[in-house]
Image 1 (cartoon, rainbow, N blue to C red):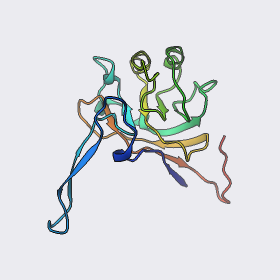
Image 2: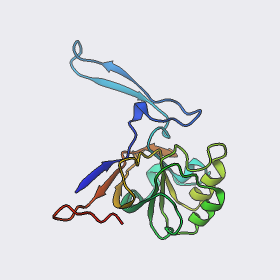
Image 3: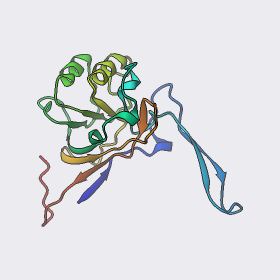
Image 4: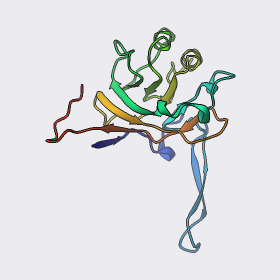
Length: 189
């Protein structure tokens, strides 16, 4: 079994324009103090994170209400969404921008979770419409991925959010699991 960490490091991550930059403060520090203790300050959309429907849908689900099965299971890493709308979990590798037209196609598909490497699934200058279409269809968004070490292919995704009651998003530790058969050969597609 091979594990591929597809998570940005939180304190050096890319930050969406206008979002708070994550930071930490050592409250207690050795030597001198008996132990280490750290306070953290961040936006729930920093680094690798999920958007729950509540992010853009007024009566949408908060992160703690989303079915956990969405965050674990078979997924496909691809470079183009064309022809892959039957997957439940789809991760788009590279600089892929989802348009409103793409979002409407995705909303009518089997996709339950859509992941991208950028900090926002929609166009950087106008992401709201794409978010409303996808989140309104109940599709969970996994943003800020680092797929640089993940070749296109089939994996198992594990990307559970923190249980942040009432929040519209959450940081995640996203990992791809690749089963390697005995002998070491891999079937990437």
